[in-house]
Length: 310
Image (cartoon, rainbow, N blue to C red; front, side, top):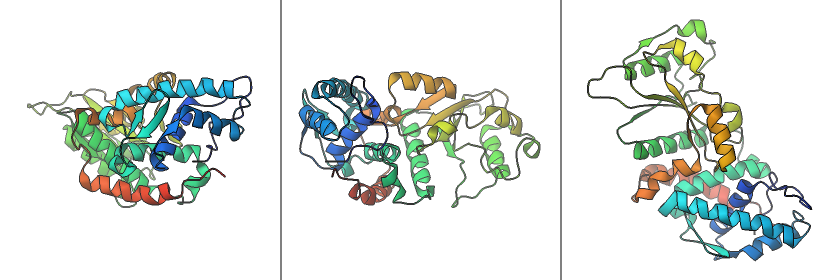
């Protein structure tokens, strides 16, 4: 069985010191990545007690019951793309994780926060990870927001466009005028927190349309990026006719209270794991085959080295 997460699951005696989202991710990873034919609620209770997370089985049963309710909600919201079958007292895989690259990708990215020692094995260069998640987010938006146009604008080592180039392209796509870039940004600025430009054009091609400026945050430091892109800066470096809105994408699965709190901080559109995977509810292969294959290749060594329980 997969080891107990290093974060989000602390010793619990009289009160629960376990984060429900972490527990659910851990259960999903056990079934999906460990290729267990079936895992029961009793198996999870035993693992939590044997791992010294819970002092008593009675207390462990309480959190496991809550986890099963949350897992059922995940299955309902994600729909046919959810790779697990949540039964009354057990959970089992519907198909191998390679057949569910989207969900497996989001789950593995989240696990990196719960298992930081495991994540460190693969180095500190997150260029490929960031690029894959940005393209994944773009594919999701294009599939769920029909009629909207999406452009990648983010900076990376393989796409080292300076901010002036990015601003020029954003303004050009929207038919707006470039503002005072040099006055309102530092010389070292790259994309000023903007990864994707998303807008809904009309046949007249005039300005004053719905516009979202997206930040795609795939790492465990996503909370520090909730303020980006900074609309005060972008409203000065592009002369918008109508003020755009912020948008934020992350692979984590938020509980309701966390979702509302983070949505308020974004003050715009928030796409967590549930919303990123919603195109799968309509059926069909919305994720491009080439991108799906790249995601599987990125996941292979990481899944193979997930820490086992000792």
